[in-house]
Image (cartoon, rainbow, N blue to C red; front, top):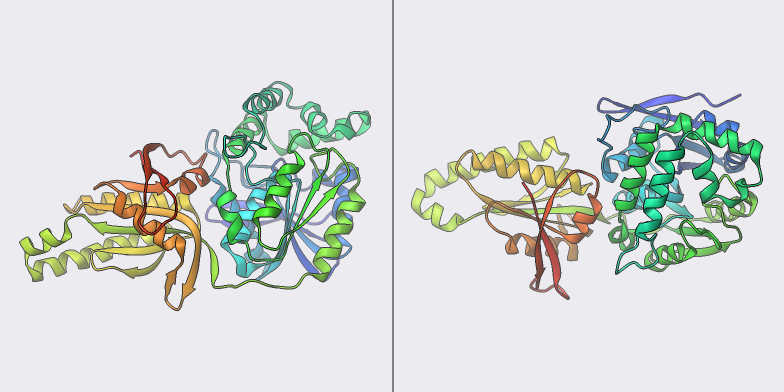
Amino acid sequence: MLPETRYATRGNVHIAYQISGSGALDLVLVSIWFSHLEARWELPGFAHLLHRLGSFSRVIAFDKYGIGLSDPAPPGSLPPLEEWMDDIRTVMDEVGLERAAVFGAADGGMMATLFAATYPQRVSALVLANSAARLSQSPDYPIGIPPETQEALISLTEQTWGTSALAVATNPSLADDPGNQELWARFLRLAASPATAAEVLRTLFSLDVRAALPAIQVPTLVLHRRDNLTVPVANGRYLADHIAGARFVELPGADYGLGFGDIEDLVNEVEEFLTGAHAGGDPDRRLATVLFTDIVSSTEIAARMGDARWKEVLAMHDLVTSRQLARYQGRLIKTTGDGLLATFDGPARAIRAALAIRDALRSYGIEIRAGLHTGEIEKLGDDIGGLGVHIAARIMSAGEPGRVYVSRTVKDLVAGAGFGFLDKGSHVLKGVPEPWQLFAVDS
């Protein structure tokens, strides 16, 4: 009997999920993007993977927003990675899980990585298999997929969706299994439409979560198949090298998907790691997007207005900013006299909040500057500290009146969210090693 498909809600979005297995350990499976909770049980390899994981854990699996049995996304409007990451939290909350191990499979590893860095208190251990911090090749990431290969994969997807061509191209062991090919073709048809599939691939090729890796504090296992041609093994080594204390295991095989090839060796490694893993790390350190704002020329304005009127302006400023922070799920850390310090779980929400604060205050004749950076922060009572906070403050100071300035880290993390950016060049930030490339949100 198949597990029951249920729904968790995030706002007006419904996320389909299933619970399977009988083990004592709770394991959240963040599978490859193209998914269909019910059709995956018809695939022999995938079903075997789920049964083996369920032999030592309670597996909580879900279809991401816009995919499979979850609500469809409007055409051309797939969410940014941070909103997809919220699917994990939404399902965990619905199931009543305060903490669980998280298993990121293939490209689902980017979601799992960002979640583990952002919510360390909710992750007991992290497993990444055939994953990468970035899929695209770049001058500072030569091990990624070259642009021409990306275009070939997108073209193959658009032209052959509904067949097994993409699955065969990325999983060589499927080439000699015609019976299984049709099952996978049907699975992919149920998972997404051709247009959605191509859009998902374009989004995946724009993502970069390298900045999140140093913030991961939980026990981490990185598995990668040695001859994986789609995402070469160097990508797995990069993950392990940049996550403190991570264990790296190289497995035989060339398949990208985990429901292919030698599943037993892979699951044996996962079982050994998770059943012996212990909670670790500091729950007061985590990844966050930090926002600093200040009122432009506040000293001159205060002198011109006088104390009484200036106090009224600051009260209005605090009211406007608190409303926008609540709207975009920001957390006010403190006001700074003529500005604020706040944190967000996702950079896209932080950008939208900063723009909303700027526009709302501008309607009252007040101009601000804002700076954003995503990095590791440390909780210090009711305050926060760490290099990530310092960088955000310096970015704000380097900004122009009326502009929202961001680090390259923020720009990379919101790829696919629909923002435009103006390159503001390289800046030396006081007290920060090496020059930093800054961008202004184009709005």
